[in-house]
Image (cartoon, rainbow, N blue to C red; front, side):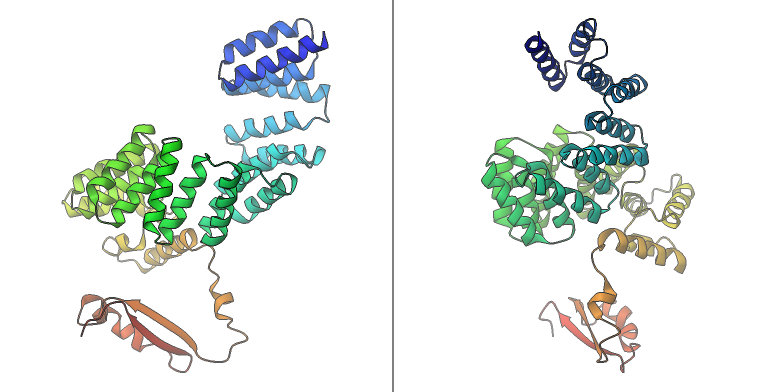
Length: 399
C-alpha cells in the first residue's frame, strides 16, 4: 500500500511539472478520500492551487499542512512563494527564514531569498544566500549562474568568467552560461568570442537573452540592420521583453527614425511605467519631431518620477528639458545610485589618510575648439590647485 501511495505522489509531482494541473488536482482529491490528513497530499494540493492562482485556497492548504507537520520546511517555503506572488514580500521573507530555521540545508528557500534580494537590488544579501547554497552543493547550477549575474553587475568580469567556465564544465549544454559568458565578453570588448558563445547559446536553445546580446554587438559595430534583426528575434520569443524593446528604441534613435523609437518606448511604458531610463528617452524623441501632444502632462510626470528617485531618464536628456538645478542634481544622484552602486568614492580616494594632492583625470575626444571643451574649460580652471592635480587624457590625436 505504501509503495502504491508513493507512486501516486510521484505521479502527481510529474503532472505538476508538466503543468497538467487539473489532472494533478483530481488525483490528489482521489487519494485524499483514503488519506484525509496526509501532509504530502495536502501540501501538493496547495502547490496545485498556487499554480492555478487560487491563492486563498492554496494558503488554506499550506496552513493545514503545517498543522499536521510543523517541522517540515516545504510548506513554509511554499507559503513564501505564495506571499511573494501576491506582493507580500516581507511575509515571504519571513516564511523562507522559517523554512531555513527548521532545515538550514533548505536550498529552495535560500534560492527564493536570493531572488527577492536580487529583485530589490540588494546584491550583497543575494550573494550571501547564494554562497550558502554553494556550501551545501558547490555544483548547484542555478546558484552559480545567479552568482555570475551579481558579479557581472559588480563589474567583476574575470571572477564571473571563472564561475561560468565552471558551469560549462559541469554541464556543457547549459545555454544560460554561454549567454552570460557572451554578455561579459561584450563588456570586455572581446566581441568575436562573445558572438561565438552567444551563437552557441542559441544552438542549444534559441533564447531571448542571447538574441538581445547579439543585437547589442551589431549595434556596437554600427551594423544596424543585423542589430534590429536580432532584437526582433528576441521579441519573437517574448513580445514583452523590455530589454529588446528598449534597445530597438535606442537603435532607431541612432539612425534618426524617431517615430519608431517612440513606438517602442510607448510600448515599454504600457508594460512597465517605471522601467528605467525610458520616459526621458520618449520625451527626448518627441521633441526631435516636434510632437507636443500631452507635453505638459508628460513633463510633469517625468518631474514627479525624478523627485521620487525613480530611474526614469539618463541625466543627458533632462539638460534640455528642465532648468532646475534641484532636478538636475536629483537625476544625477539617481543615475549614479543605479549604475555605479559598487563605486565608493571616499574609499578609493582615501581622504583622511592621504595628504598629497588628489589626482583627477579627464578623458575626452574633445580637447580642442569644440562645444564640450568650451563648456568645461572654466570648470577645470576652478579646481583648487592646492588640493587637486588635474590631468587631461585625449582619446584622439588631433592638433
